[in-house]
Length: 373
Image (cartoon, rainbow, N blue to C red):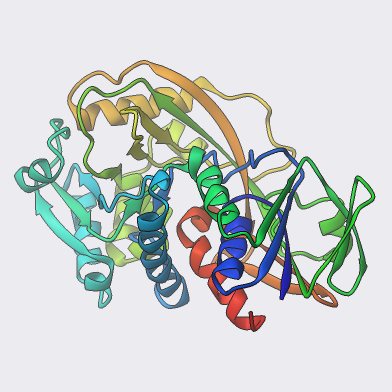
């Protein structure tokens, strides 16, 4: 079988990976020379902890297994089974963590409520003030910026993979055939379009009623911390944004402890991961209304700095990068991904939202299974 994959973000690359693993020939086409979108502009978190139950949790857990397996074969991914801690600062936040630990699927997620001392044993860098923490052993991390290059290198070694960068696919010209902006036609047994947040042009022509929206976020990265941050770290505002934490205790948190004004205005939570060079990737905000602003605003960064310093008990290292990114999210946020056959032999796969990095290996595996690769 010959598979044409359009898009070289993590979702497209994982489709290429599964096709090659199953013995097929793959041509992957990317409009940039290399991927530059949300697949690079994220935390690199394999984030099981906040996922909704049912299909979403099953997808995340399967993806976690796949990431670990792929990471063993491609060490440059920087896969680390580091888990996550969400420190809580008062009884309202603690009650949400307790409700999470009481979930029937808590063991599958690796949830455990730990004391302040236990949290510091797990992550000694957390010297600030908090009364307990939610530990999620199943969370992990990879390095998002080099990940696509590392995967591409491994795919090239198979001898069944061709990468074509700097080419934009413009038309579907027949069954399982597309034409790029160089005029070249690429034909196979299946075409999988993974456009990320590029939902105009060809995607709009193929799926004019696509139930997917674009979401913008802001993030930052610091100089090296100077010590290990041995887990990912979130704050209790993350409880408000992830479906796993829905409970009466979360309702009480919302009623009794509004978000800080800046956090509420920009729909914020703290997520933080240490990179292999020692720097911290920190975010994030959420913007849903189009057209998106083109500025990166200082207030959200100042808010995040204050939250991080309260957990670390020390000043944040110098911020050396700030950026914005855009990802695609199903308008029905309970859906893991939008997968649709848009022409004979052509499938569109997009919209995983903030779980794209987490779930992409399992999403691509399901596509491969459904298409009979």
